[in-house]
Length: 332
Image (cartoon, rainbow, N blue to C red):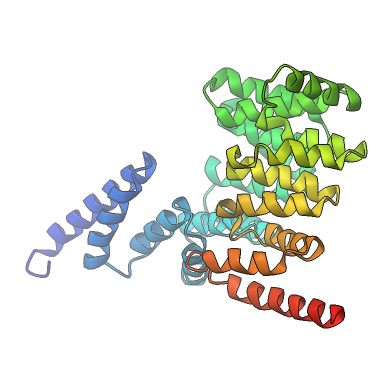
């Protein structure tokens, strides 16, 4: 608005920025996006505007957009703790945990605040740096119960499942309505049951005509496969495949993949794709499962259906087609 005095224009920009932050804080992404559009029209190149655009991209799961913007902003504003924090969050979203840890450390060097400390602890946990992550997360969890789930994940990865269960139980006391925490608690309790005992409990549920909780399917599949009962694992999961949400399907897929039941892991990874389109590790496992289960052409078609959401799948389609051609040549 060039005809307004500079002080008035600046006040408008500050008001818009506050509104965007408030909308982001309450999860109203549509309102934040609309206000950001107005701010970009008035002040497109300021670090505040671009930082808010990065935050919105991260919060809405626009990983490719966030990664590209973060790459620019980290170089342009290497001393801004807020921008570096959201750059770290963008790296974390793409599972670049080394990059996330580096950027979050840089953010904390400029200004220490709990959000950056928490995400640094999460990144270090995913890097396997448990001894460094624990003293970061433990005091944060004592002040904020939300961090208890991060601490539980650290304990779980380190093999301390009793401590992980205790942390989840404490989290549920603070947030009893959390479905994720309830599922995590069920999973950890299932792990605590001895091998055959869990299978017997599942068989009892089936005999009674009751569904096996989806939350414990990964553990049940792992136990069945270890017991040499892969067909039972297939039957159990395929009866439920359409009911599983992408997160449950992904967790169960990893159990089947670990047990080398590749036809089952293929079906489950495909069911998890809405969640895993940018997960390089998941996509590599899915490619391998398709190859070993003889589903290369099927997976190429699945990837084509998702190209609008993940352009990087073009390269994977080409690889699948090459593998299929090589297989046909050998069979011919």
